[in-house]
Amino acid sequence: MASGRYVIMVADGVGCGGATDAADYGDAGADTLGNLARRVGGLALPNLERLGLGHTTSIAGVPATSDAAGAWGTMAEASAGKDTVTGHWEMAGIVTRQPMATFPHGFPADITGPLAAAAGRALIGNRPASGTEIIVELGAQHIATGALILYTSADSVLQVAAHEDVVPLPELYAVCEAARTIADRHHIGRVIARPFVGRPGAFSRTYNRRDYAMPPPEPTLLDAIAAAGLPVVGVGKIADIFAGRSVTTSLHSEGNADGLRLTIEALAAMPSGLLFVNLVDFDMLYGHRNDSPGFARALSAFDAWLPVLFATLSPGDVAFITADHGNDPTMPGTDHTRERVPLLAFGPGVRPGSLGVRTSFCDLGQTVAQGLGVAPLVRGISFLPLLALPPAAAAS
Image 1 (cartoon, rainbow, N blue to C red):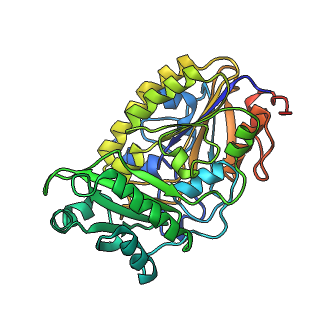
Image 2 (tube, rainbow, N blue to C red):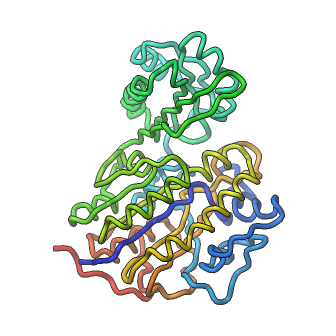
Image 3 (cartoon, helix red, strand yellow):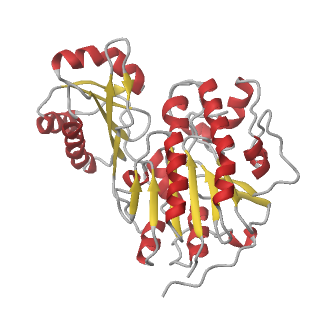
C-alpha cells in the first residue's frame, strides 16, 4: 500500500479554453484564464507559472516557462454538461452521458407544487437568475411575506434563497432536503440552500450554503480509496457533491482562504490517502458575477499561498491543481463555460514535463487510484508513469 498522500485541489471555474465542443454549449471563445488575463492587463502568478500554468493556454503575464518545476497539461471533459457535479464526478471516474435536467423557463408545477407543500411556504421567483441579483430584486418581498426565493441557472440546479432571520438555517436545510427528494424524480443535479443576511440594498450571501447532490450512480474513486481503508478528506463542498458517500472526513470551509487553511491542517493529520479540496470563491464570488478584477485578485492570493503547500509536501506526496469547468467572467451571461481545465502535478519526486491533452477528467482519478494502490477505475488512463512515480502495491 502507498504511504504517501494525494491532493486534488479544484480551483472551481478556472478553465483554460480550448474545448472543441464549446460552441455546442454556446461558449465559443470561452477561455477563463486567457480572457481574464487580457481583460485585466496581465496576471502575475509566479508560483503557478513555475509549475507550468503558462503551457495550458496563452495567459498574459504568465509565460510558458522552459524550466517548469511541475508537470503540466489540460483535461477535456468527456461528460455531457459543464456543471460542478459532472466535473467532480468525472474526476472520480464517472462519465455522465445523459445531461442532467435544466429549466430555462423555470420549474414546472409538478416540482413547485410538492416543494411549496413540503416547505409550508409560498415560492417566488422561479426562473433562471443570478443568485446575487435575485435577492436584490426579491429580498424585500421575501422578508415581508416569508415566501422562499426559488431560482435556477443554465446548470442542473434548484436553488432556494432565504434570509437567515426570516427562515432559520435548520428550516432552510430541511426544505432543501425535501427538495432533493423531489429533484431525484426529475434528474436534477443539485439542490442548493442559499442563505443571505442584511437589509434591502445591502444583502449578502453567507457561507452557510449547503449543496445536496444526486448520489453518484456508479462506484467512484472515493469509494475505492475508502474500501481500501485509506482516508478520504473533503474540504469545502466535496462531501455535498458526492452525497457524503465515502468521504471519511468532511471539513466545511468559508471561502478560499479558509479552505487553504484547512488544507494544511488536514495534511498535518493524515499520513496517507486522498485530500480532495474545492476552492469555491473563483466561481461563486467572481465568475458568476463577471468580476474580472476580483477573479484576478483571488488567483494572486492562491498563488501567494502555494509555497506553504510546497513546504508541507513530503516524499511520496503528489498534489494536483485543476478545475471542474470554466466560468469566464468576460463572456456574456453569468453561467459556467465549457472549457478544458488545467492539470498541474507537483511534489517531491514528480518529474516535470508535458502531460498533454487528456481526453477525460477520469485520467486524473485513474492516476490517483494507481498511485494509492487501490482498485482501478472503470474509465481513465493513468499518467503516473509520466510523473516518474511507481504505482503503489495493490490493496489486499
